[in-house]
Length: 496
Image (spheres, helix red, strand yellow):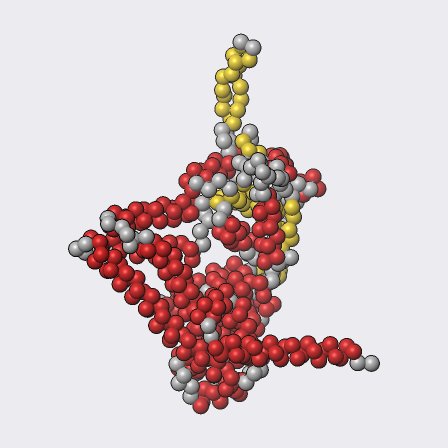
């Protein structure tokens, strides 16, 4: 299965494990909840999907890599306690609480969230001294004498022996206590993730043309050569920052993340070409409606690779702004009910202080639980920032009415700015469709444009909220063509 399928399966499993009966007891007892074991090549996103699941289900998350754990750190240290049996005192050996189990309780105390995921990475790389205790843990969820709290689901991950010399192959007895999911790399699934995470468009466009380079492993005379999804994502972040600081992106830099000489050479050659396309086509001019006859002619005569790169650059500009508009809308929607509650409040400054403290506490709890995405974290911080500014405005106002008017004016200004951005973006989208239609008609390029706007969560949300007339018109035409093609195929099947 791919990581998207694995994510759905894990999510469903966790929701089932956390089902309760009418008495509040878990319908599947802890001992019967098989730990989930994600088995797959390194760097394909196993850890990322567990983080996403915790965020989406609003569960706490505690993560540990098992490679560094000894028997003592995982099971706890021995200590001597005195106990009385039948009137006689005895020294009894016990164990302190496991570092791993203690971290689960710490997360519950700090966040106030009682259910969560305990994620143990590199589970099949445990030390030789710890290996015997793993069977007990996987069956009974116990490290030493301390059990994982109820409401915490165990998810584990590991690499096959092919990729990691430290792997200890589990025997049948151990594997029979796990819910095993074997995960394979899949570019189409990763591309959805990449678009949402803002992976550099040059990387996405390159891999669209060279899908076989998305995940690559081979043994050469120099040793193991590899390129992973994690490598592409990390490389993307550094490319974006290098571009912002006008630093050179070359084979030396790429080779630090992509450990294959051929792929590095081909990507860097493509990246140079990508920059040339940017200069040749003047993307900003196209989106502003200033399309030169030269650019139009060049696009019409371009090969498929060049057309795909051009579409990628245009979409990157539009979808980035759509994402910003959607996230700003989410932030303003979150803020609105808080500000409405101020209307009838005589002590506005005090109320704003209370709202700010409550939001800061919520943010702290969610961060402590590791259940907050970067997008959600940014939204909370923007809300806190606005409330702080509103409090300062209220302190300078003469009376509650003036204070609320000042806060409302500030809020309305942000709404107005969003509306202006949406209006500008609406115009740019019209110009985008006009250019693609003029250059390529209703061909594959238009299909790619409509499809990419549909599958990206931010552009699809933006269109659902604010509308996009050319998108609707062209998607309706393409759907009609698709229906006609299906009818022709069905008719062919009836031919004798």
